[in-house]
Image (tube, rainbow, N blue to C red; front, side):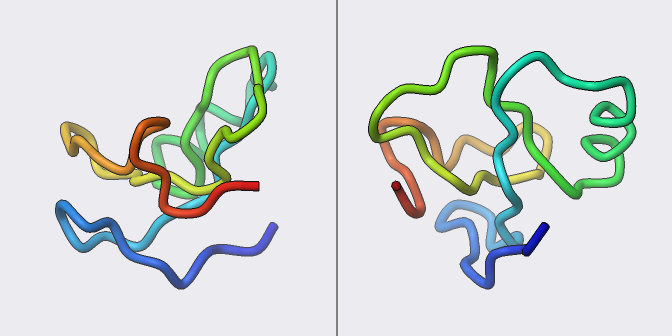
Length: 69
C-alpha cells in the first residue's frame, strides 16, 4: 500500500489511503496508527482515494476530494 505525498488542505497532515468495504479486524489497528481511513461499505464513482487521518479534521471529504479515480 502506497501512501500519498499530498497533504490535507485543512490541517497539513499527510493523506493516507481510504479503504472501502467491510473492514478486516486489523484495519481498526491501522486506523489507530493513522495508516488508513475507513471510507464505508459503499464505493461509488468519484469516491476519493486518499483522506486525512487526523481525528476531528474536516477534510478532505467526498465533496472536496484530494484525488479522485
